[in-house]
Length: 300
Image (cartoon, rainbow, N blue to C red; front, side, top):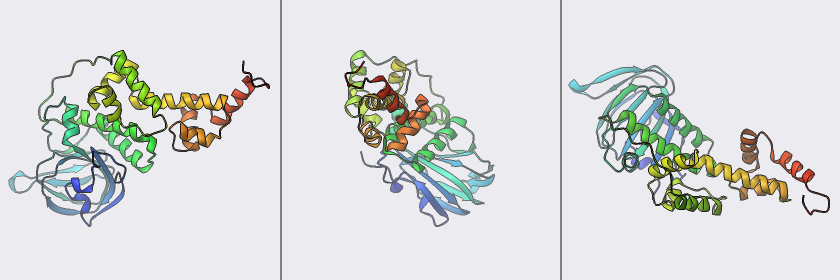
């Protein structure tokens, strides 16, 4: 699928008063576009866009006005406040002060998939608060600013969670709670594990893992967690660490080479993850392996 880009947004990011600082352009994400910027005061009308827009205010409060004529609403939006503009609707907006924001644009395809393939009508919101949505957008922004190819699976997971939260908290009508998901069958779980192991060194999108299980991405994520107790990203990371640890203990290849072969961006990335997850470092693990191997190399 083609990358979601600036042309799929409603045009706010193209205004001269908006100065982008980072974005997901060029990262190949098909259902999400994320941009962080400094916005100066402006007033403008925008044509309908094919994507749903959620704006997170990082500072403030700043007064924002949306609508025109007798259908005008105005609110001083504090830090952490959210502005939601559903796809397919015109927007008239006035920003009265400068502020830092993060924009997250989501395709309607991703939103429908999070709702089991059914259409979703989102509400227009001004200054709403939703701690989970705020946390997800902040995590997306951080991932963009510190991008590593191995984070692709994690980003797909964030996209699915973001879409699910929009359905759950920001739809026009409350949805009937979904039943607790069942896990994957042994056959499907084995197919996913095999794919993870075969392509451990590559960025592995959620969509490809879901295809291996013959499920949509949202169904796959829920069922995978029900089967394993972990998200696909967490599980894949554990497999990468497991292989890296085995190679460090038993082989002599440079740490940087092992890191890349196991799907980490570079040696520092492997070191950081290993320290946080296992409480050790590649160098310490290699020394441990050498101590456990007899001098004649025959093993224990």
